[in-house]
Length: 412
Ligand SMILES: Nc1ncnc2c1ncn2[C@@H]1O[C@H](COP(=O)(O)OP(=O)(O)O)[C@@H](O)[C@H]1O
Ligand SMILES: [Mg+2]
Image (cartoon, protein in one colour):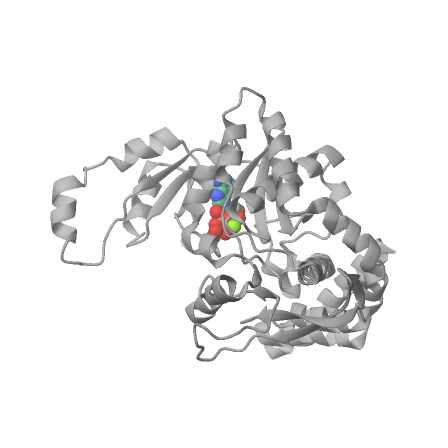
């Protein structure tokens, strides 16, 4: 029996609030986990940005990374650490880099998910490169945008094929609006996607490892009110919740993401996923507020589990197994149940739940207590300070902290 320390790294940019809560709760948990004949304790540090030798050691066992999608030094350090040092990282940088929104639509259509009809159109304009002119002259077919619009049907959404943060998204009601929006779209490669409109319900399913929280979302509200303060049971049935969790975990297991959110719109009893390439999802108290403690706890559980059990990073994807199910002669619900089984295997759901029941029983209580403390309030305040003008600091700190207290009441 020996004592070992497992190192959890936080690779951060604009994140302020959740890391403070994560670190503080981990300290309060005071874990000494018996695992494989050892007593395991945990240390958490912020990953720093500096020159590195490709062959150097890495002290971390698990890294929660928030920079891969835009900060390349960190992304390449993560890749090096996975390939050379056996690091476990949330999320894999490879599929984030290669899986734009576009291939995620295609892959999930292939699995039978009801993704709205979507077309991709070449861009309105280009960067001038030496081969551009000969390529376009030889192969670019003149196309009638109006015809494509008709095939998709109105209203439709025009949005970049690689998406993110509502950049360049517009709702389009007719052909002349489509032409005008296309003329403005510049060098962006755009999708035209049939609108799910009017929808009955907008939800976001947030997945962390095998854990999923379904949240009601109001895209028309101001930023601080978009995630609706409501428990799952207030807007989805148990069966719908199970369905949304299965869809979220299928997507995440398919792309190898431990941490992702899936937006779906419900219309006529069907949930249509419309955006699920969000492998660096909203994590800030200023957007999640009421749901924020759930996320902090979910991240803690999954990071501790992965570090304690030395969970192996999956280097290869397992698409063939999903496609095999997709090609069977059965209903979509049957297929989804089978995808969900693959996901549960990938995320070791049973083993994870057993681990939490055995070693993290006190997390609920510790977190419940922590989220009432001045330290928790200070974490909220720091994020508010970073985002809001000074005259709104007190008002929004109070608002978000009050919603966290509402979460505490609901969890009692
Ligand atoms: N097919 C659609 N039907 C209805 N609303 C849509 C559709 N596509 C996008 N939207 C609206 O536009 C918003 C932004 O589009 P989304 O695909 O989520 O892009 P981003 O990657 O920028 O978040 C969505 O949250 C939703 O409100
Ligand atoms: Mg979105």
